[in-house]
Image (tube, rainbow, N blue to C red; front, side, top):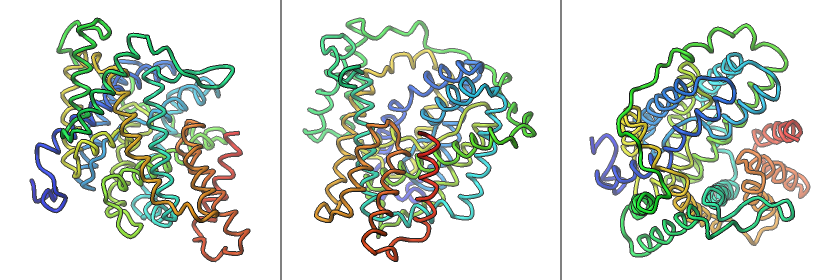
Length: 431
């Protein structure tokens, strides 16, 4: 096992990998609660979606660990499930069964693009400075999510965002968890983020902020209401309206995953000569998981940025992902226990992980204006538009425009020109 996952080469141990897997799982566990809630608004059976969400995370994470040997958890994308429900089903009036078929078709296209290595080629031609900008931008985005989930930052009509009620019990719990994690990390305690989450959970239950679970073990809900439904509407997918939906699933999922892969590879030190080793294997695992998810009854999957919490805890191999898959398997039986893993518990971890990832910005050539502008826009657009793909799009467009304006158009890879045109179309569509 150690040889297969290259423990010695990557300087890791079973203890580190297991701790990282537990940390990543706890950071991802909210998906099992949130995804069914969101998709139930589209009319899907909540219990069936819970099982589909867990099974997809098991399948995707296991495949990611074995195929790519990367410590990345895979699960339903929290952005694309909202797009599925509120834009496609509710906004466009498309039945969820037909929309799920759109997920199925886009997943097949994902697999084709991954197998013929087009996705890998695109990731590898992205300029190095933009890769650092993507990694650090996702760090700011993750930290922003953590601050929002903790209630430290809230919306405001006057200033868009403002300081929340720091006296709120849930916010105080998040602040307590944050301080505990910081103390543990600066004292070089391995697994400090995980221990901080455990301590915060226990304290939350003691003071009544987190409700004690009513039971520990529950039965696994049936998949019958969603399993195989996507195959029943294939004829309805070839309409102009749904083709746009399929393209959006494909486009956003593509660059969400690309951004996550770049960020995590950079954080873990996998990036070599501006290349990500075994990127193709990771992309095949991710896209195959999307197909599996569509079949059992959930939306497009993605490599989860929450995996960065596990990497911060020491995860360096695919064994971390195998541990994540194992814990999602247990979660099928212990679903009532997941209620104690609240956003107040996971929010501090996201803030700290975001801080660690944002440090990649130090590698950007800040003295070069033609690099600074697209890199800066990439970074700030992610949290401010609440979209990884949008930040990448704006950065790519600016990079190409600036290079052409400087007469350095030959330095831009042809694929970047194609992507720029696609990003302009995407931004126009979103706008």
